[in-house]
Length: 261
Ligand code: PAF
Image 1 (spheres, protein in one colour):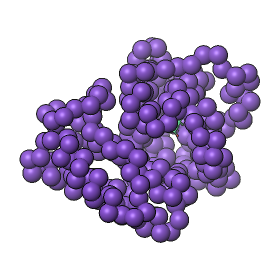
Image 2 (spheres, rainbow, N blue to C red):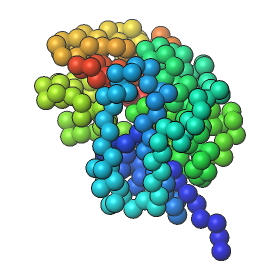
Image 3 (tube, rainbow, N blue to C red):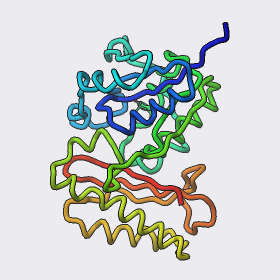
């Protein structure tokens, strides 16, 4: 009998259509699909953010009943961290800028738990959303550097009808914040149009995006970056593939979005 292939979708729960898309792709490419739900405390640099992170386990299980998966791994923190970790996975070149600057320690916690989860799942393929662009770049690099035998597959962003990128954090927005949040996508689209019409200056594009988003009173810009799509290093002129990365806060929720230029 030939060996069955397996696909792994690690999540922190509060599942939405974006997660279900990862699972559908895993289903179509593997014999066995494993999903994990674990709100990893070590990747939260802010105790309030960890406390407020949505936990909807019963509802998640209901959604998973129709998701045609084969196994759910939903460990307690004690199971993943029987003792505090003495090993930290750090991918400093890709981690230190962008979100890494806003959330010190976040990517070390994320990379360390993803290493543990990949080792536990032992899957042929693992699926991650492209919305978390920096996270995906770090995971790909770490898997390459450490010879972790799972292929890392990035899956395009899934959006609401009004363009807002799907995220577990969206459910923490008030109705007014939710109505305002699509400004991120709309501005990103307009900036991409400007680039298509010939604007290649990173500064000019960032200034345009800043002005547009600042006009929305409920939005606070945390960061806007245009970086080399491969190594995430800063650039001044878009003369090779670039990633536009946005972090915008509504209330106490930071939303992220991205597009490749
Ligand atoms: O993207 C997430 O949901 C988390 O960062 C991950 C990859 C499941 C690690 O905890």
